[in-house]
Length: 197
Image (cartoon, rainbow, N blue to C red; front, top):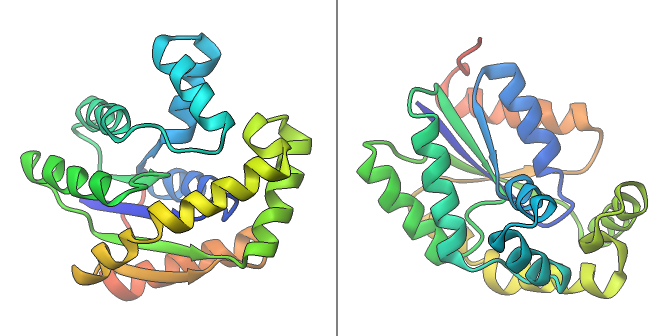
């Protein structure tokens, strides 16, 4: 089973690339951002908590995100594989994911990290906010805080996966197609051809 952690800063293109990989190779795309936005739209208790947290550019508490991941993995127990987009975002989440994988007799295949310069991230997020109206992308101070939080809390998990020899950086600039080709080339180099539908 192929299980990919697709890693990168806000605006790195994780969501776009995860959808392409999932559609092409029959993998389940699990996006914490999408799930949280659905909860916010439905105004559930989790959604209200998430909305207040995300609006400030902060991370939703680990235990809530891990519980959502468990639910998704159990829901798609017979899947060919998973792409985790936006998860894990802290070392505690990475450790919890490994524990969950062990319980399910699975393991993370690789962490693919999209590397994009900060200036380009800021431009991408601002543009996305103007197009989509997402509150966490509309204001420069919130965007900057999200990137600061990423550097403080999320970047450290690179070392967690590097220690397991699962960390693989990918150049995240260029066209969507170019980045997609780099991702698939890396996976072919490391693990052979991906399963196709």
